[in-house]
Image (cartoon, rainbow, N blue to C red; front, side, top):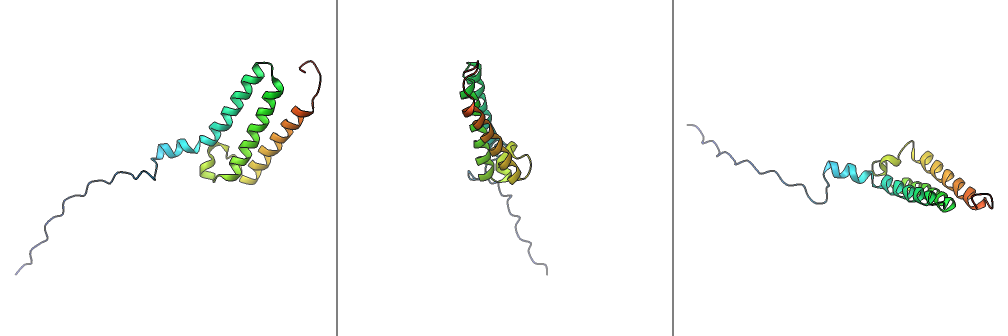
Length: 115
């Protein structure tokens, strides 16, 4: 006597991705957001320099580097995107030092033809 085989189960429909987990392309795009913020600040600085406000533009570039240092320190390696160049301490130290150096030069130069 043979036992009856169980009825075949219907295939389950694929589950849609949950809103909490973004798709892979969106995740890659969001990883570049910190870099885009820094580039936007540098673009504003370039406009100010092009309008002959070089001191404001240079201060904005220094500020953009300091923003990059804070973002690199606060975000994980996956979230930092293109701000990640070397190890986190080296990146933060180099961004912060260059940003402070540019701000120092910007704030200490007085007079001259560019006034």
